[in-house]
Image (tube, rainbow, N blue to C red; front, side, top):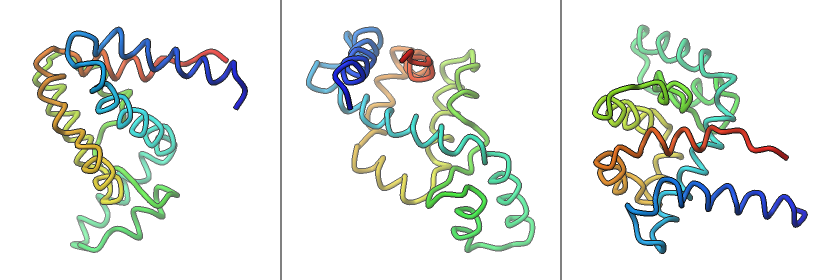
Length: 151
């Protein structure tokens, strides 16, 4: 990675921290939110093209009463992970109610496959959601991660 790209990424991350997290968390706690959100945004971008196929496969499997769904879901997603929630991060940014946004965001997190659940658990990301929700910051955080970076 060249220095310009590195600096751009650092500016992007610190911009989010300054705009969204500054008065909510101590500076040393920023990674507790930034790191899992970086991972979620990347996974979301990878899964976005196959979202409808995953939802269709999930419905078909549920309708057929098939409980062991992992292999079929991974195949539908084209990845070793998937998300069966009806949401993408882009969908979540249009929610007007903070209470509904929190519920929808938690449903989005819950829809991830076990591999991603393990990552979220290791980050202890769900511990940050009450603070973000109380401050009405979930939507802003998501929006900041969806802003395209110029290269």
